[in-house]
Length: 173
Image 1 (cartoon, rainbow, N blue to C red):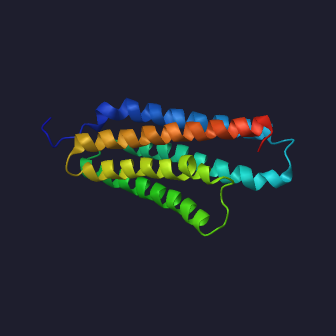
Image 2: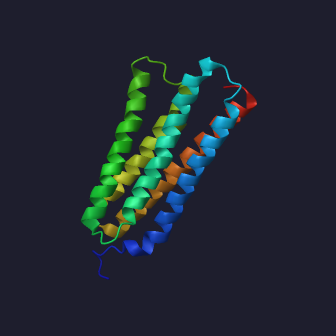
């Protein structure tokens, strides 16, 4: 393997593991939400949706990008395009959450919620897109950045899903 090569096969276990973890966590979230929302006030439904939807999107992004990268016969260019498309979609989604808040739509209850639900995921997607772009020029650094972005997104999504579960189960939601 020379300096410009990218061996995605070496990363296959990583992508499969991170995708599987994200998929399992989405499933667990649905179980917790469905068990906990039976006795909730119907007025709480929009609030739950506002906080839950981004987390599901973030976990789904990890699954989507991870599975794209396990497809056989990728070159650095095709892997870069796949990662960039998924990452740009995530940037757009995270950015739309900030724009809604900026327009005074009161999207989140507390301004401090913007950091874990919008800013940190935006940074994780930015790392992912940066890595996707680097796959064209410096593949090893690029794949490292993509992995860092996906791990950051996983950590943020786990933190946010835990906060949602604790809030719902404690009756403070």
